[in-house]
Image (cartoon, rainbow, N blue to C red; front, top):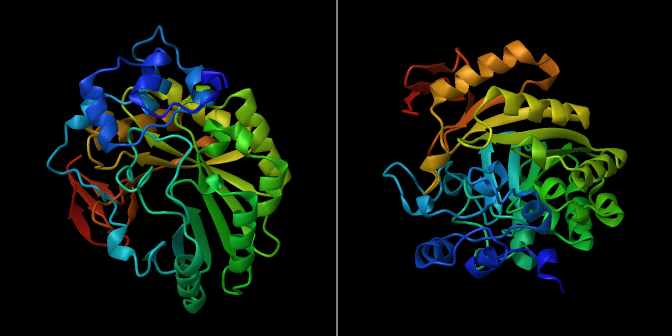
Length: 342
């Protein structure tokens, strides 16, 4: 098989593709954090541009070895809200179901970078899956289940259909929401069989599609997204504000307009989390808020995302708007002002 048609998974593969040098320092990064770059993303990278925003998201850097004191392997506190394996129940009416720890690509800024990839938790199967679904069945206050991981679109159609059927058998669950990068980074996985497998029969089906730069919305991605719309899903976006990728108003405006053009409602623009070795991606909150003001002046309300912070330690998510943010403090969902220096 042609090497260009394979996912790049190690430093040697990066070197062969002309994306990095095969050196010991980069090998140290690879030994700690998984590497995966799909052919679709590798083809997008401009090798003549040392600041290419696609490469910056997926090609490892020795900057990742610089771990700050405030960075942690669980920056948004999943463990604190995990009653049984595979479940994160942070908010009363919704819960995460982490069905798989594999992703088609491994983003260099990922907030779960120490929980995903080879050697991490296996997919939820057997008794572990039964335990997670039993928890959801027993908690009738949960009306929305967010399927995540890893990337749930890495499931086979058969496994995905089984999980959907079991969730839809719980009458209190009204919404199934999938969080995925696949339609953008590996669009060939969005086959007719997969789209049919995850289609909701009783519940409302939503898909949050993660992209950070307008160049990611390729022709192949557009085809995959259209297939999901045709299958009846409502689509929203998720993006991360990343230094050197999308921290300028022109790029953000093009990205958000690109989403709307494809029938995707811009949803969240995340402030980058305090994941280990990711400080080179983080802007300040002041910079992010200034970008949102500039964006508001340029694009329609339909195209505006909400700029949000996951308060470290599993507290809650907070919009970075005047009512929730004041200099150095953020308000939790419970109305408590907490220190955050970002």
